[in-house]
Length: 142
Image (cartoon, rainbow, N blue to C red):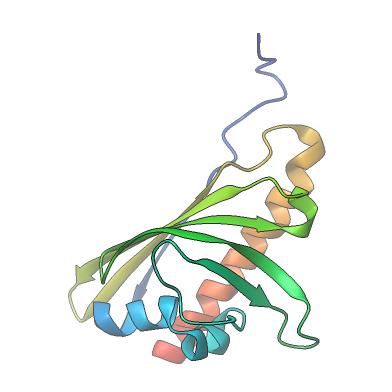
């Protein structure tokens, strides 16, 4: 039985509008060089079924990693995703791209995160991180 007083939905959901078409936004999400411009450098372009590693811009240390589970170019991508504080436990990051007047609506859903009060600091840190990184993407596409 779950203690509903301490467990909750900790899925991070964010959506932004970008003044770029879906193929351009897709390139920012999948091309190693373009990922480094707004997020973290990647060891290679992201490809379905392939592992990925994103590193710290400053020192090259491992930041986040996982596998690209699914890609439907220009519309949808799903990653397994972990960071050091998750101690190897995988979470799920989903990206959805939709046409919008004059650009693209990009939605992010990050699920499978800790649902207890002990893990809430990590949820807060990831939420703040995604907010900042999506802001970076908005700036460079604008």
